[in-house]
Image (cartoon, rainbow, N blue to C red):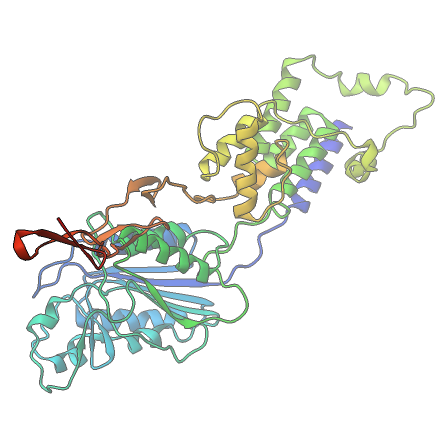
Length: 482
């Protein structure tokens, strides 16, 4: 009988498992141009591009083409090949880090072999932004170009102008994409330049890495958070800007993690069913269907408890014992569907004794818990769960630690609660750093650098000499003589 129950349980566990929904196809093309042949090399673009490509791979993009130090011909060929990959994509992204320039209102990305002796050379030796937009035009839902290319451009300083009226602007010029659901994100607003940064990545890419891969984060909000981080990091000297518009529906670059009702809840329901059967065979079947994760660890602990206790009676002996007079024999099929019994007769799921500590550990991992992690569900733990509710949009009861809350927090990747810093400090990654204002600027009430207010002139006595050797003073418009 036990073997039959175990077999039926295995079929139920495997048959009820829900497969993931088909996701949108996402493709990305990443370029980092650092080693320029005719001007000084840039330090960060290769690092920036490598980090962004890794981000796209970790967030399960279907295609991630990553290239370094592309020459003119190679860059054009790579764009042509990527256009083919974008034809059946729902979301297409191009990220470029390197030199860029604006000539007569047109933006260009500069390959590493460019010479650019004259302004007209840009047409042949550089890649127009319009060509970049054409490469992602086939995508159905979202076309996104991210340009960390607004750095101070050394080509402009030595470039000869063939027409005196032709403009060579600072940074890149603002754009208006002609296609709907198309965004172009600049590291710095049109007409201004961006910083390459003193660390491994530029300030713009550092902020992109922090927010762009957050599952379920609406794209417009992600870029607003990027803007705030960059402005804080640069003392308001660099403001990223996004051109283009999206429709009324939320657009996310990385889909949200599957809700607990579709993943952990299914596993939990299977766990409860195995617990109702309560045999070693039932736990073995559950572990075979769910070999890893929190509930798998619980199931193994339950199985170990059975193995350490008295072994169950042999099947023949169990069947030889007469059933109690008032009880009717339970059929295997009835045992399998026992999970559909009324709620009042369903046993409660055994909670792990260290659930408060487990939940606090996960809350600390996502940035919602400060201080030490303890075994008690105290006021600090309740505040941490309340902060998670506020930032994740959940409504868990903060008075107690629950498996539902643990499942939801475990499903999050990266920081959920923003890093809070004292006045005079700003968030930089996972640390708070002191805000240093430039000369002429002071720290304002909003914790940002503001221009120092001019001092107003104050009335003060002014010494004057009166007639007859008397000494007179002028104060507040009146004269006083000694």
